[in-house]
Length: 170
Image 1 (spheres, rainbow, N blue to C red):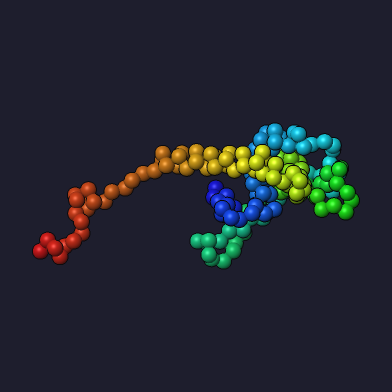
Image 2 (cartoon, rainbow, N blue to C red):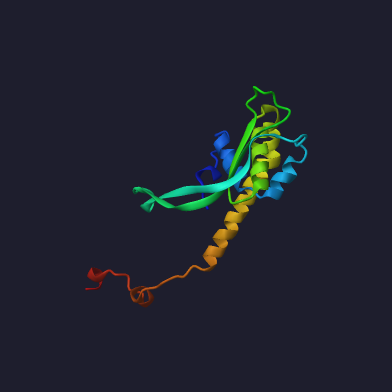
């Protein structure tokens, strides 16, 4: 699935919304491997992982009026890392599709750590770049599967070699 934030402009810094979108689609094993050195203590839960439903809206032709498309299962959580001060803004939040409490927890921890300027550059290379590569690989595989089912339809005129220039043949 294509997302606008998948194609980061060369001079554009990665914002929080961009990295949260990447974290929500990352495989839990990849997140866990990248965060294993950063996890020192248990987080203080502001909102423990919980699963619920959200209404998804769509637009006809991507430009028309909005309509309710259906509901999706979403898991959300919010936490503060135990090392952070009470006034610190290192609060991690995560919303992920599905029922994975583990993925929501890991994404929230990563969100909190990415807000720390001292760790952001390291996490950019060890966490976000591998996630981008993984998502690009998945997208390429999905595109290849779709291309393998592509059917070319020919009209009788195209098969006969007719160019459609009736005036020139007269």
